[in-house]
Every structure is written in C-alpha cells, then in structure tokens.
Amino acid sequence: MGRRICCLLIVLIGVSSTAAADVVTLKTGESLVGSFVNVTGTTLRFRSDALGTISIPLRQIAAITPLPASVFARGQPPLTGDLTLESSGDWQIVAAADDVVHVIRAGDVNVILPTAAYLAIVNHEATPWQDWTGTASFGYSVQRASQETNTFSTILNTKRERPASPVFEPHWRTTVHLTALLSNAAEAETSIGSNTVNASLRQDAFFAPDNFVFGVVQYDHVGAQGLTLRQTYGGGAGYDFTQTARTSLSVIAGLTFVRESFITNGNQQTAQALFGEKLGLQLTDRVRLDHMLNVYPNITLPGEYHFDTNTSVTIKLTDRFSLTTGVIDLFLSNPAPGSERNNFALTTGLTATF
Image (cartoon, rainbow, N blue to C red; front, top):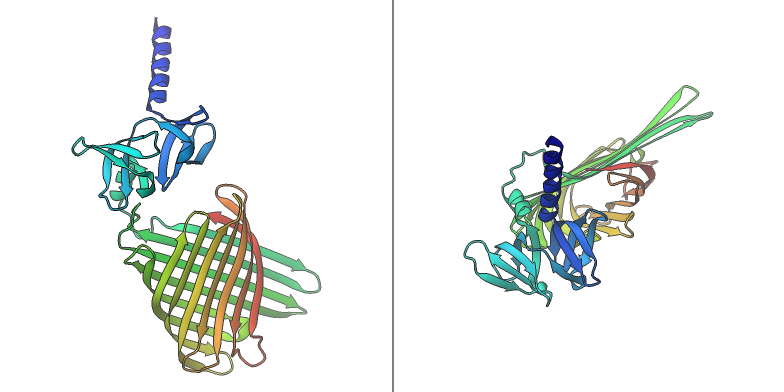
C-alpha cells in the first residue's frame, strides 16, 4: 500500500511539473518544453529542457501556451496578464487589472517578460557593491636565460546600471576600467622595472534611450614614457548607436582638465579635449572582438596630444571562462627625453566573466 502511494505521488509530481512548464509549438509541428525567458522585438528567447536557452523568430512559432507576462509596447502603458500568440503573429493579453482583452502588434513590442521576472526587477534593491557585470583577465609570463624576466598583466572592465529596468527610464550607468602591466627584468645584479597602470571611473546619466552625459576620473602611470602620474578630470556627452548582445557601439566627446608629472621635465597642467569610441562585435558564438580608443588633443599646448587604444579578441572556453589576446598602445606626443612616444603591449591571459 505504501509503495503504491509513493508511486502515485511521483506520477502526480511529474504531471504537475509538465503542466507548469511552458510549451512552444513550431510551425514544423515540433514542440519545445521548458520556460519562457523574454521577447525582444520579433524574437522569443526560450529555455528548452533539451536545447538550453535558444532564440526563435516569432514567424517560426505556431502557438505558445498561455502564460503570465508583462508587455511593454510603443505608445502603450505596460500591461500585465495572461498572454497568448495569435495565428497572425500578434499578441493577445487579458489584462489582470480589468479583464479587458488587448491585441498588440508584434512590431510594436519592445520587451515581454514573465511577470515574476518583471516584478523581481522592479522590487529589487541592491547595495552599492551588487549588480556589477563585466570581465577580469589575468596573465603571467616568465623568462629564464641570461636575463630573468617576470611580467604580470591584468585588465578589469565592469559596469552597473541603476535602475535595471527592462524598458527605458532615466538611469545611471557606472563603468570602471583597470589595466595593470607590471614587468621586471634582472641581469647581472641589475634590475629594471617597467610598470603601466591605467585606471578610470566614468558615470553616465541617461535622459533619453541613447543619449547621455558623463563625468570621468582617470589616473595613469606609464614608466616607459617617464610619466609618473597623469590625473584626468572631465565630462561631456555621448551616444549609444547600438547596444545588443552581438553589437555595441558608443561614442563620446568632452573636455578635461589634466595634471601631468614627468620624471625629468616636471609638472604641467593643461586643458584637453576628449573624443572616444567603444566597439564590441560578437563574431561567432565563441569569438568576440572589442576595441576602445580615446584621443586627447591638447587645447593649452596646441599640437600636443595623447591617445589610449586597446583591441582584444576573446575566445569563449566555458560560460564563465575565456582566453583573451589583446594589443594595447598608449601614445604620448611629448614623453620624457629619451623615451619612446608609443608604449605597445601584447597581452594574453585567462578571462573570467561575472
């Protein structure tokens, strides 16, 4: 008797789990069982039990089991209720607030989220150290011959957006960047160090979906150029041309106040313009290209300038770890006497995504 009761409970649990699952039926007749993730535009993301998280064009879908969702469409207030997909490709939602049936054209949809996911975003309260995303890479090389060389490199890129709303509203974006290249070469009791450190904090304020103003603080030390410390404080405006999972492109322009200290020719304070771009391209599912360039023409001393550029290729190994190879060039038109204007570095290392 006890065994029969246990078997019955297992069957009931299995039936209830299947019933609770979302089902997507394709026009080919195939059905996918799993959970609805979101809809952006005309693409549905679905976490399938068999295939993992996949993206499906709506034109390939015949039907979706009714599900509780929140819909954000152009020119309409947010709607929450039971959602279904019509044969025409448009959406139908029975609003929970008044039981009124609303039909929303597929082309008008910005975002559709499961109601539970939307409420989790709206009600989420984060401490200052939470909700950061980004990458951190580490590399180390050793050479042992007549000369002993040790080189350590690390690059950190991270950002945080508050509030993290699924649709646009005025918000803040904070980005932090750190590059550290620490090298030491020893030969016949002589030791030479060559260190490069670049650290920046930028705060963006969005008042429209793609337009923002920003403030930036940056500190640089480039031993190979005789630059002891460069302090940069400034701000300006920027524009996000595109920000998708596969392509991102942003440009900025502004003015900065720069204080520089050199080993041999003392200190100087200047006003400098700032022009920058940041590009990200997901070339394949596993290969990504990132490029960054910031140019600083000197306003106080016309003809002088410096720029920082970084290009990297990342090959995904697992969901969390990747192999990254990059080229860094820090150019300074007026380095300390005896120093090169270009400071090139080739980096390679393991990158962790968080």
